[in-house]
Image (tube, rainbow, N blue to C red; front, side):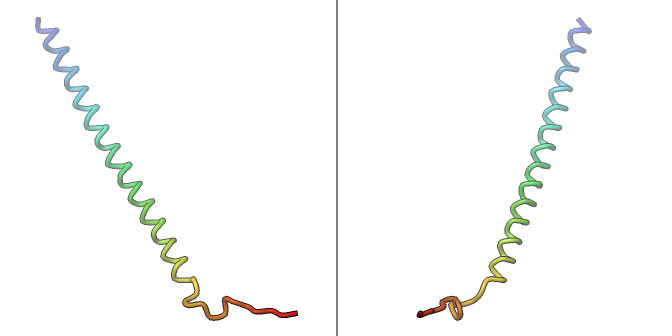
Length: 64
């Protein structure tokens, strides 16, 4: 009887360990996704900052 109780307790311990490890992995993936979004936003901001303001010089009229 003590072996079955010990085995059940051991199985429950492994289940808890698995749940803790899964939660840590989800947290790590969330951090990585956040970093990816932030880096994408930074590159978008840089492109927007370098784009011309207004339309001066963007239209060239050529007549032949």
